[in-house]
Length: 410
Image (cartoon, rainbow, N blue to C red; front, side, top):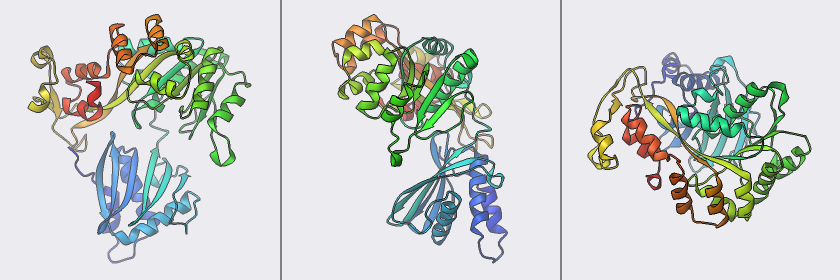
């Protein structure tokens, strides 16, 4: 279900004009305020044929909020450029900026991305609400046994922990929560440093640095310098290239606990990705202590969830025992969940712990599918198995996990 979001403040402002011209500043404030109060993570303002549409991302899914006259796009873009200290007259090149928190649009910070298209500029605003963001491992939605294993990984004195998953799967929140856990556990006795692009939230007692490509302050340069800063824990925002990967692996081997993210099609596919970056298998098997695959799945609204049967075309994906014994529920849609049937999201995780058996397999450069089989034999619960348990418990729907978890994870 992808219903439109009610743009209360925007509609109220437009209705109050009564023939007067639009004041762009007030209109922008109303649009942002509507998105913030709906709980959106992003606002998309884009030119369509005949109108300018405003869509908001709720729980990872885009929903239409309002259509506005196309001729307002240039003025809205100009207003946002001024707020973000961008070049207001430049319309043919992408621009990125930041708008600090302000009470007129809900006290949130905005990251602005403007991209030129053939119909005009497309604007995407990422919303950062520091007042609502929690970096606490206990609220991520990890199952109790998975949470305990993750905490055990964080208690290791050295090694490389990698998180993998698509954009918007909760990797940054999980890493920030992990760093916050380390600060709470060790206090001033631990030295934690990060290199990020960008720094999304300021953490207490953590030294955070932001890469700056324009000044040649890249991940590799930052990490080399950071190694001389006597850190115990290093967080690398993302491993994107062979040089960053090599330094992160080396740091994990030389007495540092390194936490980072890497894009890979699957949890076990991380090793193939790093080998393709020409990192030697013996270094990977010695440095990597765990890989965590993450996905975020929408949870059924507790106020309108009702029993249902999964679609026939999908029911065959369920094991016979779950199909017979499971408690299947789906939100019907209500005012609490904005008629979506979902409220909140929960993390599905797949935790691959590197033991002696897996180290031998990595040294032999076994293919990803074989590594997955070995990890499963060693007790790893797959993303699909974790998600099916949530479906059988009535926490989410089968259709939702199929939307989020790709077919090769089945």
